[in-house]
Amino acid sequence: MVKYFLGQSVLRSSWDQVFAAFWQRYPNPYSKHVLTEDIVHREVTPDQKLLSRRLLTKTNRMPRWAERLFPANVAHSVYILEDSVVDPQNQTMTTFTWNINHARLMVVEERCVYRVNSDNSGWTEIRREAWVSSSLFGVSRAVQEFGLARFKSNVTKTMKGFEYILAKLQGEAPSKTLVETAKEAKEKAKETALAATEKAKDLASKAATKQQQQQQQQYV
Amino acid sequence: MNSIREACTNMKHEHNQCFNFLKGDGSEDPYDDLFKSYQQCIQKSVKEKEIPIERLEFMGHGKEKPENSS
Image 1: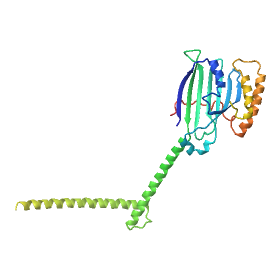
Image 2: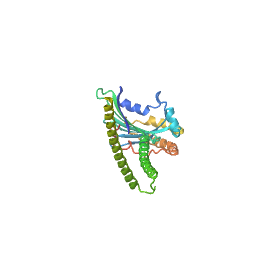
Image 3: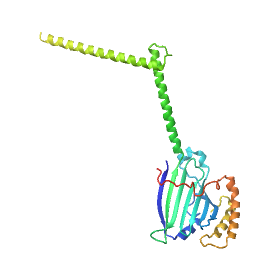
Image 4: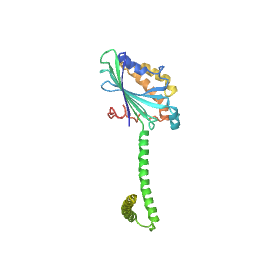
């Protein structure tokens, strides 16, 4: 199960300016959690697009409860790759950013498209999508499924145990097969039910007789 | 902003200053050389930390991401 985010922002600067700022945005007062930044790949395609890969390391700030649950993750910074494709002719830039470690705990992927604002050509709009996923979700589902499977297996054992003890109590050799035991249990149940019905009938008729006798005595 | 390998930080800044894609400088040589030496510099740290920069597909997984998967 993935958590999805979609957002749109506008920067009141031209696309060219935003492009330049994109490469110079670290450090800034809001990026204290970003520790290092390096361009690790760059190429210009035959159709004049710029492809880049940027490696960032960021601090791994977790809430206290997460630190307790995942102590192994606490000491390690997060490595993040930011890939980008810049098309200067069409004035679009697409970026894809994701963490490449701590991935077993959580993966966050972000895809941005930077374009000239449709209302104001001097502005730039950013369409931002993100996907947050965790394989821990799969773990919790596996735990549930395992729990249910084990429970069902234990129910079978419970019933077999009951039948075994019942057979023993009824003086029968415990080595009898389950089918026979079950059959006998059914027969016994039938007989008991029949006996109970007879008894009920009997009691009912006795009660009726007693009532008649009492009524007759009253008029003496 | 620091480089992943401190020793390369100055080289990184030099490289960044030389980069000017939009202006479309004809002279690519100085940039290419700067870029090469900068890359060589950081490779040591990248290898030490075992960061799989090359093995990961560009722009992620390449497949179309579903818009809403919750």
